[in-house]
Length: 409
Image 1 (tube, rainbow, N blue to C red):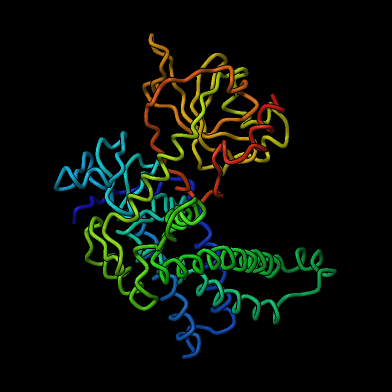
Image 2: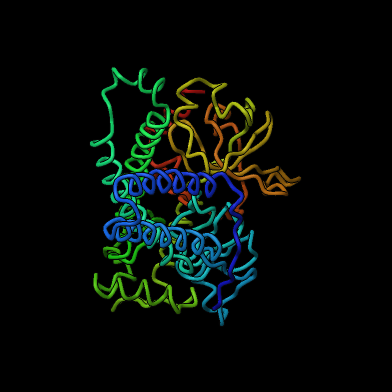
């Protein structure tokens, strides 16, 4: 394997929350099975074995996906030849080139092979190395939740009393009342978790059929939208049947570096498209001066409710900017801009600060971009969508956006 294994900690709010939900649903369902179909009966033993088998599969796939990780690209990785370097993106953080289909995960601080997204519930990026385990997890969880919900509803059908009698039941038979409340709570958890993870599982299997990650889907959308001579063809789409085989074969024995491409494409078709998109984005990058600093704790609320409401996903990186600082921004989403803090050198050029500060900040922090000159051609390396956030746009995608920006300030 060319990609390293990174052990991720289970001591994190995501895995802990997931394990608590699994425990609540499991204990509730086991109680219902034992109460309706005692283990002494063959039916009870079969139903209990089936359910606990699903739970075992869920836990096994969960911990394997967590501890195996997405597959880190070694720091300082370089292709075999200098010529190949021209077709690859360079990651300044990892001090190396990004192999095809790899992306930098800002949470772990490493480039991940065939990264799909960062999943907080397993506290790990989902990539080539743990893709199979993650698929098993998002498939077994809805199955287990449907099984649990069915058993819990049957128990409630037989043993639930009308709400008008709950106060008397709590006083005269507290054990039955507690069991009923816990079963209702367990059923609610089963339904909610089943729907949420089931939807994620559908998207994941759609990605398998097209052999396309969530990040790649966003890149393809931009490739198809920008002006070009010939239509863009995704190089890794080999056909649905072949795609499924490719995904699982690469997960089982792939190195995270080499990938099969369709006829008419070459191994760097996709990376060259990424370089073209990055050049276009770099040309549209604007430099702003911070007029009003923001707070780390208010999350944009100091600029009004709607600025706070339109803030990026919680796991997206945010930065605190101070009055008088300069930032280079190249992406917007709602009332927020994405960029990095820069400093002006003696020759009136801008360079990144050390350590690097890159992330989202509220748009009301800035002054008019026309007030700032920028002669720097410093490269801005971008990697968005690591946590599945909505697709933002370039800050100069249209004249309307420029007008909105100036009007607000």
